[in-house]
Every structure is written in structure tokens, then in C-alpha cells.
Length: 116
Image (cartoon, rainbow, N blue to C red; front, side, top):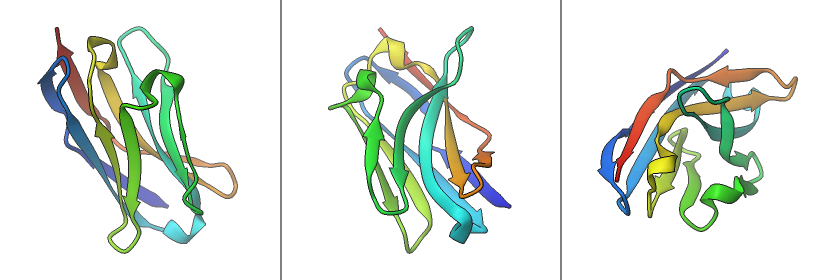
């Protein structure tokens, strides 16, 4: 089992910044990648950014150049730095971990609201 706890969401104005944090614990040796997903009301949950065990990152086109995913291996934290936020970034953001059997673990989610 892997446990994920997000923090750092909130309300921000257009153009502002937020940093989301995800504390990971449990069987972390089984995790091959971690990432951030988001889900807006009435829409499916979509990937925002991922980082593999080897450090390779990938981003959704809509956030490239604005968001940065990073990790602190020693402390088992994953971060999502979000800059130049737009109203369309408003969503519940979820931390995700995928293990080598492709099982997905999810955090409880944190709300990000960008006002126009």
C-alpha cells in the first residue's frame, strides 16, 4: 500500500502562483512514477504532470511552461509548482502514484480555484 496526502490548494487570482505538495508513505519501493491529475466539475480526471523514478518528467500541453513537477526523494515529497494560473486551471488536484503492476494510488485531492 501507498498513502498520499496532498496540501497547498486554495484560492488565487489569475496570474498568481500556488505550490501543491504531496506526502508519500508506505511501499514506495514499488512505485514507478508519481504525478498530479486534476478534475474540473463535469469533466474527466486528466493528467497534469508526471515524474518517473528515474526523474523523467512529462506535462500536459495546457500547462507546459507554467507548471513544474519536482520531488524530494529523501523526504518522500512530490511538488507541483503552478505559475501564471488561469481560471481554466480551476479543479480538484490529485496526487497519484503508479506501481510496477500498474496499480494506481490516489490522494484525497485538494481544491485549486483561480478567480478571474
